[in-house]
Amino acid sequence: MGVDYFKPGDHVVVRDIDRGKSRAVAPSVVVQDGPDLTVTFIPVGTEVLILGGDWEPHSREQVQSINDKTWFLRQYPWRGQGALRVTQPDTPWSMGVFWNGPGGALSSWYVNLEQPQVRAEYGFSTHDEMLDVLIAPDRKSWGWKDEDELAEAVRIGYFSSKDERRLRENGLAAVERIQSGEPPFDMSWANFKPDPEWGIPSLVITDEERALIVDKE
Image 1 (tube, rainbow, N blue to C red):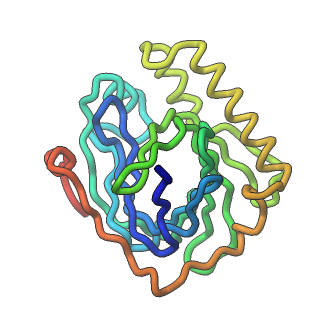
Image 2: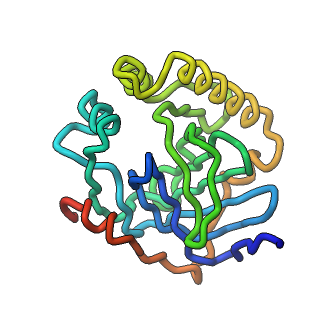
């Protein structure tokens, strides 16, 4: 049987799932979807769920909470500027495109290291693997992001040293691919403009996710 791909403008959900428990829920609009490429967009004002708890973001306590599966979810509206997510099948990372506020200049190309996304009836699921890469708008320089989180995850056994080597290799491969400028990870996404008729996707969550929400802005 063939795959039923989503159409441009369809509203879907992208979930980050860790051992059966959601760590993030992002309603998104489909920009493009097919056998070789999937692109989704989070408009400003979209209500999303993100990892939360009684600790500072990106702290050791957060990593421990992830390891212990004791996190909660917080709900808030996506601010600043919409965000693009560009992915390919069987690729262990996605490319995020971010801008400096509405109508602003490109701020960065963001490599999110993650397990290859899985297609679902509601949209897509993946599993974020902590380490990320920030690439400058001109693509000439880059740097690791959240290395301290990765180090803590290795220290407590959430990741192994082999996992760390794999993630860094994947990150370097992503940087090389993006810096090459070859489609679909090319500069054309810097000028992306959403269709105003797409609207803002609704936050549709499961009972399990609803039970994890601790507050709402």
